[in-house]
Image 1 (cartoon, one colour):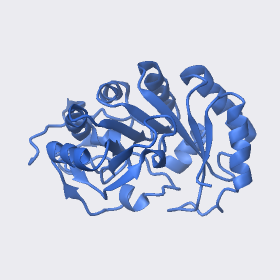
Image 2: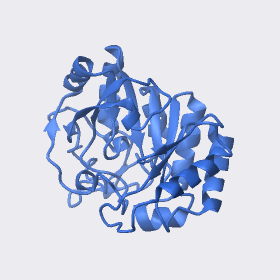
Image 3: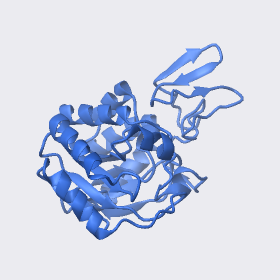
Image 4: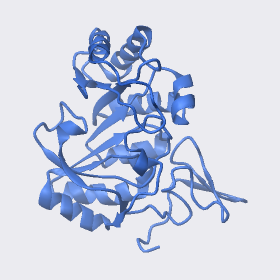
Length: 280
């Protein structure tokens, strides 16, 4: 391997290696050397393979209450451990996007030269575990911040390690429904709730995004339950971005109305002090 890195959080079995990064617990074998995310596998083939880069305002991630006005170098891995039907970056998360290899030192130095830090984003950065663990401390040693924009579908132990080298997280809470996660994302809700609770308890800055999709996760009862849970488990000051959906990938439902976004923001705002309508 050109990066000299071996996969962490794996369990050796007679048939191969079991990945322990996320709840899928993929088995890597000679005949199936990569997991569902297509980033992690026997050779860590996605290590350092960066998809498109941009320097973005931190508000675009979105973060409303962490380092406002700063700019971050954004990049991510060429794959994801969920398969959301509405993914806005599906060409990268589900396809085979072009990549450029950057060593951890190269990426950290690039972030120092052109921004205030780095955002691991676009697809799902937790599946880039080894690369984030190698790169994030270098970025911070150069005075930059490190943020994660994540679906939260990660196991507890690697999450704790990632929290230790990062400064802020924005986690998608895609719905208050296990059925939604199974049908639309190929995952389930409880690991995401565990992630939110863990990050909130760690003291690392946490923001949450809830994308409102018509006919899927737009009931007022669901909004109320999600908001109540967030207030109780993450704190009523947790910033929440209630965002507008547009048709993408396999999801063809019409775009969320602006009125629905503001209705959802009102329901979330009954429990939480910092609610921000987005994508409007």
